[in-house]
Structures are given as structure tokens and as C-alpha cells.
Image (cartoon, rainbow over all chains, first blue to last red; front, side, top):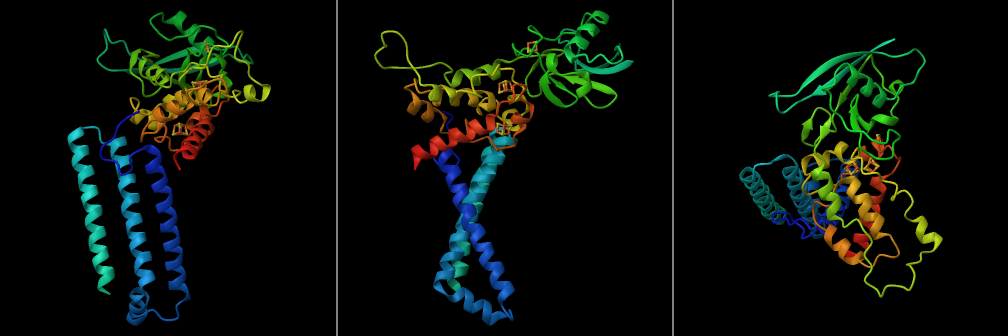
Length: 115
Length: 235
Ligand code: SF4
Ligand code: SF4
Ligand code: FES
């Protein structure tokens, strides 16, 4: 058993499942989004505004954003533990990634509910 | 026919850093020599060349080497299987070099030790022996044959980056060998020991291990089975 304090999940399995589920959410979001763009006759401000003013789409978008954030946290944590050996630099990098992810999540939520 | 060799040399007593040394060997036309026999012939030219070997028939696992960029056992790799006009021989990658082609396997064995590679049965000892059905026994096929040559673990990038934390393909193949053994009663605690972010989950499915295993084993598949066992237990 190897302990890790800065990973998202509390076990290897936990991280692994989160990584898989968030990937599915992101795939669904991308597919829906591309479908929307290609099926729309015109894409202009009012169409965007209508799409993003529906509550279900706000929730879907926020879910996708949260998925990116969690996916990135786990992914960047793995990259940092593979390639950054000095503990200090590794910790600073991980802290930066985690804070940046949270900032994006809060900022994104604010933008989505501002529509 | 003259064959060219370029061999990794390093003697910690006299060298400050490793170097590649060129050799030439007369190989009889049509004879399909193994790399180990070529190394033994080269050692007659230059007795300072150091490497490990014992059984010379792919059983003991002591002559794992990197030949033309791919890990394998020198004793069962024919020269004809190596492309190009120079055969480049290096020690197994990722492990500390003791001298020339001899590496320090301590880190590899430490991971092996971690998975408790022996049968544990806490039940009352049976009168004669622990019996196993032929079906249960057949689950160990493709697992017990590992000779611990380290060709797989030292070809795995995840093991290069975290040799102290990632168990590696060889150790995980052995871990699964005891997880799936019907006579073992420590399945739960074995699984609990493996459920961290490194031990199993650092495997990224690169499959270098499968590509190089001289015994034709499939550590990636065993790792997949361990993951499924963890999943079944954890959700
Ligand atoms: S499949 Fe896993 S264990 Fe095998 S080489 Fe790739 S990362 Fe390493
Ligand atoms: S799994 Fe294959 S390559 Fe790995 S140590 Fe065992 S025999 Fe060698
Ligand atoms: S010398 Fe024993 S495996 Fe090659």
C-alpha cells in the first residue's frame, strides 16, 4: 500500500473509476455539442442564448466542466508523479493544478448561471 | 562471416561513465548462434566483459539483456533474429548497473516480495494436503511459469518512473497467481494491499511487458484481472 495525499480519490480504484466516468460525461457532452452545431441552420447570438438559458443544459454544461476538472486533476497528478521528482516542485505543481481547477469550476458556474 | 557487436561497458572501479565498446566475431556461415554463445566467445577475446548466465536454456532467468533495443534472454535469442549489421547489447534498462551487463535487481525483488509470493492458508491444516480441482489448477496456467527474468518490468515505462511504488508486470503476474489460487485464504488482504494509486493502477496498458516476455506470458491480462477483482469488491 502506497499512500498519496494530493490525489483526488482515496484509492487507486477510486481515481480509476472517476477517470472513466468523467470521460463518458465528456464524450456525451462533445457529441451533443457537435450534433447541435451541425444540425443548427443558423448559429447566432439568440440561438446560443436559448441553448444556454435552458436549465437542463446549464446542469449538463456544469457537469461537463466538473468532469474536465476532476479528469484533469487525476491526469495531471499522475503526470506529475511520473515526471517531477523533486518533492518541492511536485507539491507546488500539484497545488497549482488543484487551485486552478477549482477556480475554473467556480468561474464556469458563475458564467453559466449568468446567462 | 564477421559480425559486429557494440557492447555497453562500465566498471565502477576504473570508469567515470559508461561507454560502448566495439567487438568483432567470426560466426560460421549458416550456424545460428545464440547471443549468449556469442557473448561467451567474446569473453574469450576480452576476459573483462561481465554478464550473468547459468542454465543457457531459458529456464533460470539470469541473462535478461537489452539486445538491439529489445529485452530478452540472451541464451534463447538467435543472432539471426536481430536485424541490422551491428548487434547492440546493453544491460536491462532502468536498473542500477553494477558492472557491464550486470544490473542490481534489488528493486525488482523488493516489488516481488511485496506481493507475498507464497500460498497463505489460515484454515485448519488438512490431514494430508490442500486439494485443488483440475479446473482451479488450470487457472494458474500462464502465471506460474514466470522465471523472474525482469525483462518485462524493465521494459515498462511506468516501472522506470516509479520502481519503488509500482509493483510492475512481473510482480503483478505473481500477485494474481496467488489471488486466483483456490487454496489461498488471504485474497481480501492481498487486494487491500494493492488498492492504491501506484501498485496496480500505474499500469497504463502499454503492453511492452507482453511484447518482451520470453516465456510468452501476458502480465497485462493478469493486471486487468486484478483490476476487475478490485472493482467487484469496491463497487
Ligand atoms: S501493460 Fe502495464 S505493466 Fe505492461 S508494460 Fe505496459 S504499463 Fe507496464
Ligand atoms: S513475466 Fe515473463 S518477462 Fe516478466 S519476469 Fe516473468 S518470465 Fe520474465
Ligand atoms: S542462461 Fe538461464 S535463462 Fe538464459
